[in-house]
Amino acid sequence: MSPVVAGAGVAAHAGPFRWVPALGALGVALALQFGVNYANDYADFARGADTPHRLGPPRAAASGVVPPGRVRAAAVLAFAVAAAIGLALALATEPWLIAVGAVAIAAGWLYTGGPRPYGYAGLGEVVCFIFFGLVATGGTDLVVSGRLVWLALPAAVTMGCLASAILLLNNLRDIPTDRVAGKVTLAVRLGPDRARLVLAGLLAAAFAAPVVAAATGTAGPALLLPLLASPLAVQVHRRSAARGPGAARVLVAALQRTALLELLTALLLAAGALR
Image (cartoon, rainbow, N blue to C red; front, side):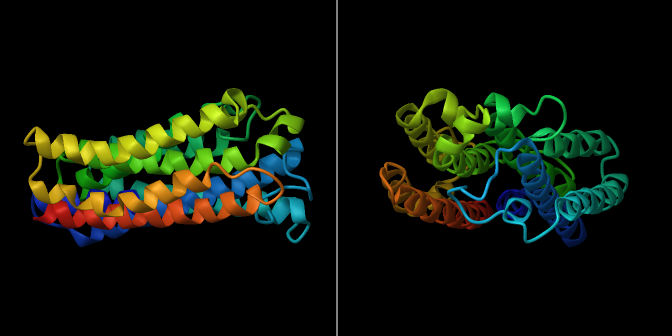
């Protein structure tokens, strides 16, 4: 929801607000998120990356609660819903967005699926930044207002950094099991200490983007409203340093706080853009 909320706020600032495309963008984003999660659930189980010893919340396939075939079918259905809504939205606004949507669906499936999943090569955070930051935020602005404005860039950077921070925290928690399974995420490649430095950089960049926009005149002082959420970012980073037997539980709580941080920041960004 967060990049769509931020993009919608930028769109409302840029020109007439169109509710139907805004709801369409939200539908596409949610369906893509469901699709990615189900596809990741299925593929990680099939590759042996998810086992009953996984440190985080139970996964559908690995826990045995849902047959793997049904998890895969749920992923296909979610991507189909995203494609249907996205196709209608693109035809009503910018037809070339059909190609962008097709690439987004492919990126969702190939994160942990396909012969050479990029999530197993340490590229998950980069692709997450692109699609749940730049594409989702800028795309929402485009379909809702009918044009892209410079204000969408800092908003997209902020959303992309926070979305990537969520994924990095998730992978930081899973380092022990991912190493055993041969899943070389960015966190595995860097190790816990350097991964936490990257996390700090993502959180800092998320709040630096609106500051730069306000300082350069791209936006007014109201775009500094997201700074109100920065204490929550400090809490997230402190929790990311958890070690020992209880670290997984602390990191799961940090994940929840980062999701809340992203949504709160998106709402503040939207409010600041509207001023």
